[in-house]
Amino acid sequence: MKNLKLLQYLIILVSSLLLTNCTNDYIAIPGADGKDGIDGVDGIDGADTSAEACISCHSNSHRDPIYAAYNTSFHSKGLTEGAVNYAGARASCARCHSNEGFTDFMDYGFVNPTGYYGLSEPELVINDNGTPDDTSDDYPEVDEYGVPIYSNNPVPVVNPITCVTCHDTHKSFDFENDGQDYALRGLDPVTLITDGTVIDYGNRSNTCINCHQPRRTGPTDDGSGTFRVTSTHWGPHHGPQATLLEGIQGALIAGSEGYPGVGSAKHRTDTSCVNCHMGETESQDPAGHSFIPTETNCTSCHDSGILTQGVSGLAADMATLKGLLENVGIVHDDHPVKGTYSVLEAQAAWNYLFILEDASKGVHNPEYAKALIKNSIEALQP
Image (cartoon, rainbow, N blue to C red):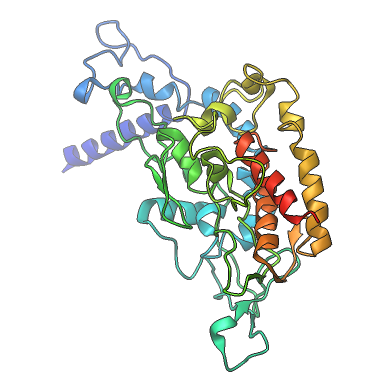
């Protein structure tokens, strides 16, 4: 019995030493023959699963600069200040605005259908649209920022996006043959929320597509040539980057500018997102976890002003389109205005919000962005 207890203590001691090694800088342990304690035969399938191989990434000296850079990013704040509290807990938003929502969606394919709340379930304020006996045209009330209004005070129980939101476990330790997966979730091709289109940027960039995609499709004719905007939050939402890069889901209004083919953008490569947003960086962000492209990322192909000015002429065209949309009344202060409009007006507004919300100033797909905006201007000009 004493021997069994001694064995148990030894197992606990060895386990604690292993855990310590996985979170600190590597220190070679002398072996009995005078060699480092990690020397020996490689692991299964020739993969290097030695402690030294793991410590090269899982060490404080490697991770501390990454933490510092990540804390400057929008991802660390739930994408916008405070968004993790109101969006991170809501079932319709949680998959991208909270750790719990994203990891549940990656692990199980769905989020908690009731959201992530503690003390009480949220009860939406519903607008009956003046027809209390007809629920077919009811919709949730939102405030001036597009945030749903609740009749009670639900308490969110969620955390912002952290390291473990995107990073889980390695699919394989045989990096030489299988490639370095960086223990990322969501490496598989992504099926878009809106229409089932599948996009595959190859490996690491696929993780990004899961959230950087629109939440709804563009306006369609209601049968009488009009379209109804029911929310000040209408539009592609804040993440249409993948679809702009792919060259899809803009409203293809006929005009003098031709639309480039789907998938033809020069930035659309097998490592589209990580090449620019996590490529060569400045010294204070050695691993690219601020996700902000630097001039170093861009100037091999572009002039140095590309980051601040965007695609040549696009800013002026966006200002022109904004003025036309404000004259129509469908856009005010870069937000859609609830009401009924012609399909053409709604499509032009969609294109404006699409390029605005992408936030790359057209860089993700210059020719497609310019065509969407120029043709929208032509459609609205007298």
